[in-house]
Image: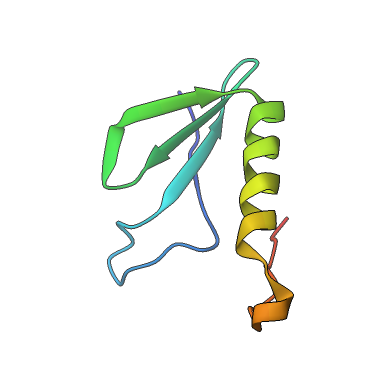
Length: 72
């Protein structure tokens, strides 16, 4: 059975607006806490590429945006 970990950026007072992550055998499992039956399977490399791409798009220091925080 997968052990799910919630994102450190979880929102909402009741905790139902979270992205959760678990380890598969050779993949990572992703789901949203408000729809736990829908699970996405990704490779660590693909998830890292997606996160790096989104961080690059989201972080625009010339527009006064806050620097992204990473937990780990």
